[in-house]
Length: 102
Image (cartoon, rainbow, N blue to C red):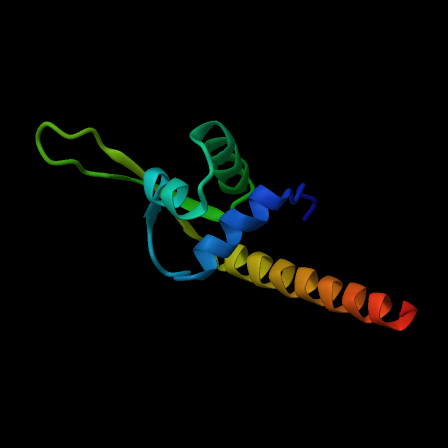
């Protein structure tokens, strides 16, 4: 799957890998990642369009607006784990090459 993985997108995926079964809402994700809504919501929409997230609306209490919830799909969990591993391997390879130059 071709998807632009900006540092912010990787941060969002990492946040979901903390508890991959849980539903999360935008404000919670924003608070935990320090991403502003103008950055976060386009990432969430892109990941949902690619079926990496499933979405749902939380039924709100009277007087509270409903919240849009997100969680990783099985494909999303696999994608996030693969990209976390590939980024870790890239950092290890870079560190090994940097050490070899010394």
